[in-house]
Amino acid sequence: MKCLIIDDNKMARMAMRQLVSQVQSLELVAECSDAIEAYNQLTREPIDLLLLDIEMPDMTGIELTKKLGPNNRPLIIFTTAKTDYAVEAFELNVVDYLVKPVTLARFLQALERAKEATESKRQDVKIEAQEFVFVKDNGVLKKLNVDDILFLEAMGDYVKVHTGQKFHVLHSTLKAIEEKLPAAKFLRVHRSYIVALNKIDYIQDGSIYIGKASVPLAETYKVMLNKRLNML
Image (cartoon, rainbow, N blue to C red; front, side):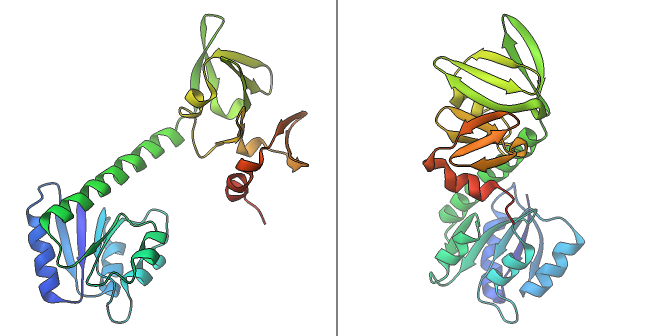
């Protein structure tokens, strides 16, 4: 994992460098004394992890994090002498927040979180790239394109998978199937229904309409649905 140390304090950079040197899985690419230098470094080569101080002149670590944006930025572990920024830091979805002086044990714990985040990201990429699944219908394994699925309906010990042309009845639970579907494309909207978000035509009076079919929208799922919809 390629990492970058960013801190305006020379002694702090030295202490962090010593911690990095004890972890074989880390490759220290560079040390930066301010966030602007780090930003320029990030434009030159890909970095997996930032060990980022917060209080720095010209641009703070939090400002740098916001400038990099939430997508495709490196994993970030804040390293700071103060606890004041913890809430704001975690709102930015960083991996961890280390308060100086940082012990080796605490540093390794943060790296484990970074490793888990990396594995989760790889799994997300793998799932999002999935274009088809195989379903067992009447004893026959059939290839089903994910983009053909309109919605899924739980029926006791079975799940009915609705497509534009027909439906498939699977002996499974809705939860088990939900775990195998691309999370970016599907959302549970009722304890008995999952819908393909890009197949929704309109929503009215507590129902979701997909083509000629209507799917009930439970109150408990409305907030999540509103977050996922590309609303103007």
